[in-house]
Length: 169
Image 1 (tube, helix red, strand yellow):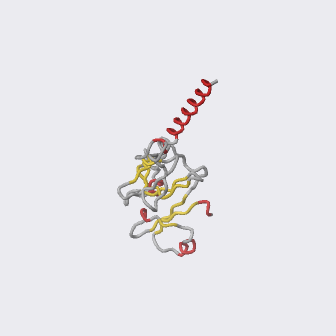
Image 2 (cartoon, helix red, strand yellow):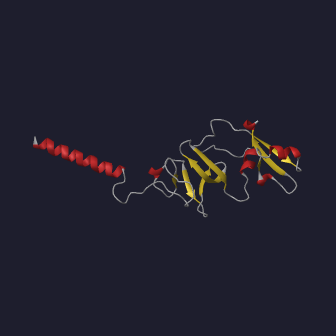
Image 3 (tube, rainbow, N blue to C red):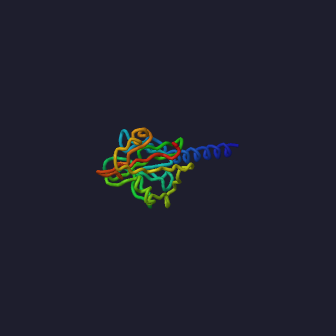
């Protein structure tokens, strides 16, 4: 009977060792939630920063901190974008262009924005936008201006480009 007790103790000890490796064991464990800067989005599973252990996120969900300590994502066919926020509940990322001279709405207009080659999908419900190019301050514009958003990067000195979501009308 003593040998079965010894076997049980060895088995229990083995399970404890395995669990300590799985959970990182001890005070040297690296915590995965992290931010690039204080007011930036918290990066947690399934995302990870590229300098974190692979166990912190899924393959393809790699984010990084740029030289301005902004959280960024590299989409294989579209380039680098700043991650403004991550909503883990609704599983959405809010992105913005990373270069001051780039124009995210312009990528949609010329259809060069693509999620191909990444693990991401577009939103389940399609959002359609209408872009308006106004050459002057039109009276109609002031009556609906609360619904329109200016697209600075597509506007020029003598015209202003606006957009609105089609589901507003």
